[in-house]
Image (cartoon, rainbow, N blue to C red):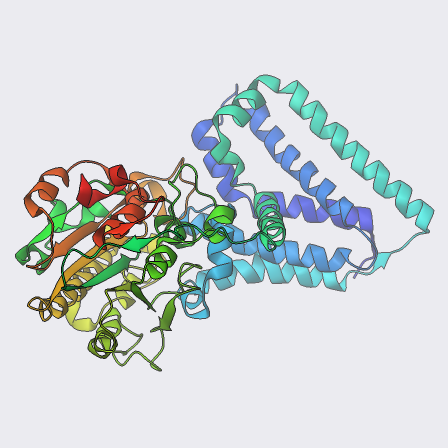
Length: 524
């Protein structure tokens, strides 16, 4: 191996990352700025600008002992990001960082593929090996310091010259095309990772805001309330036959006296945001993870009012919502007895009769589904639910036809229909002795290849309708005290997960200052 100075290693690494790991970035740039005579110099300047920025970042951490490890980590990280951006058209913002850090090993396994291995080997491991084996020339401290300062200043000046020379283009680029900056690899991901972890560190000593301490349940009769809240996963509204979808994805629910909410919207586009947000007192505009994780949720308020709470999870976890209430993990056969290739949502119904019989309290049971978790939709349902064929049987969604992707996704929805119908049947067994209800609300939607976008998690302001417009229904038992016809008439109007907090309080007639009647779907 030939020797190299630190400066040369930084420059070559930066050039490699720009040329080989930023295909997705330039692909999106060309969609906005077509490569023609007017735009060509600006597009080339973007590459130089990105190169100079990476050089500056590496220069800032270019000490003798940590430079190689940081470059190796950067190369491997950039390879992973390049794969996911190119394959699923996602961006690595803070929401996606939270999703990645909170994803369990089984969910991560769904994303592993031979194509990912190719990216990591040729764009990550192979250049990393070359970096590792290249002997570095270490000059005197004074010489190295001067060299580093010179490298920093030259590239900073280069950035300033570029911004000044193409000021008209960059004014538009930064003001009107914010989304394009999210595709810069790995600059955006590193920035958001640092920002996310700084936020976690900064927030760890924030005291919990205890709301609803005045909460009190107002009992109007002696009948017990048994309510099941099903939190769906990645269920988009326009694939529900209840909402006019051509394929019968809700054949069992269509036979039930359910109230469908065709205009329900999520708080976020990823589980890590939507789940804590939907149970929080904050609306989507006011919500952020710091406030959400340091404020009591509606489950805490209900528990304080004397309602028994149980959270059963067949997804990754509750994202902090169920930390202070009874929680059971149904992701493994240890508790879930309905498992084949993976543990099924149906298993969360096992043993609920015993739970309900142990006390006479009103009870809210939350069942967090695996639902339509992608990209391997074909794994989300038992084989007998494969009604719509042919199906996509790979996590490389871009290799499948739109029909195959939709069929796999719709089969998973068909299994959710089966699961929800069984939840309703379970609650019907208590109809004579209790007031029963089921609320179903998906956490977010899902992109299935429209405009080359897959899965979910795009920043809300640019996310397509499919990632925000979610499936949601309510079913009431025969004794539940509510005006079904009135709610059915109002169900066509636009609602969001912002309504859930006060609606759950209203379901149990809980009086508290944090209850907002105008946000309660049942009180309108």
